Image (cartoon, rainbow, N blue to C red; front, side, top):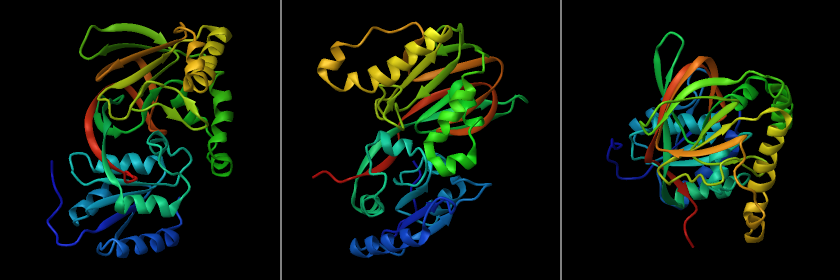
Amino acid sequence: MNTPPAQTQKRAAVVYNPIKVDLEAIRSVVGHEEQANGWGETMWFPTSEDDPGQGPCREAVSAGASLVIAAGGDGTVRAVAEGLRGVSTPMALLPSGTGNLLARNLDLTLDDLEHSIHTAFTGDDREIDVGIIDLVRQDSADSTHVFVVMAGLGLDAKMLVNTDEDLKKKAGWLAYVKALATTLRDKNELRFTYSLDKGPTRAIRAHTIIVGNCGALPANIMLLPDAAVDDGQFDIVLLRPEGLVGWIQIFVKVLWENGVLRRTKAGRALMTQEVSALRYVEATELTVTLERPEEIELDGDEFGITTGFRTWVDQGGITIKVPAAA
């Protein structure tokens, strides 16, 4: 691993999305914490439309940051994680977006600026896995990216394309409900071949495939109930509904059984077996080749069109600041 330059006093860096954060409020709290904990003056690096965080993050590390605080939505967190790939510098989260998916899956505070910044300066280190993905584009050019929550083809990727950004700003994650209704009218299936852990290649038709590093979504939706952010493997779900009955099976399984029944011993006893419309598998590596180009999303952001990909787990690939143990 690369390490930042040696220094006598620790300094934090904040990589922030200027559209999504209250910068003055953050500066005030960060100033208090750096003084209280004997750190040097914090460095500040804004993201931009052209660079959502990778470049500013690398600048911060090169400048000697002992800690990088990602202040923004899921896209900022993903970009900072990508910028920290192969670097020992830890990342702290200052959730400021609609989904805040990684923070939710780590049970971090979502709406408490003081607590989040205090955790950044005083918290414990927790190593988590990251997903590395090589995307193949229509011109056969590869691009490599990092994701910390999920990568998806089908329903979730198309839903993002159909999401009204103005409504999202006003109504938050509820904007996805309208987009979901539009997306469910799309009858196109994914047709692809896939291989798990360099095993046999299989052909399949599915409505959606999601590769998860962790499993919780907003509104208490547990899509991948067995996923853990530090177990060294992906949890992968294939949605294969056959008409209305199939969709009902999926919604009952995900919203009711995973989201409610699974939380108690008595509830788990009432859960059904796996249903044909929903298939879960686990792997450390997945290769997919699509019959036709499809939209793909990484951590809730559109990532354009792909004809296939290879993705694998980088176990313990990044260190996150979490609240210090009592």
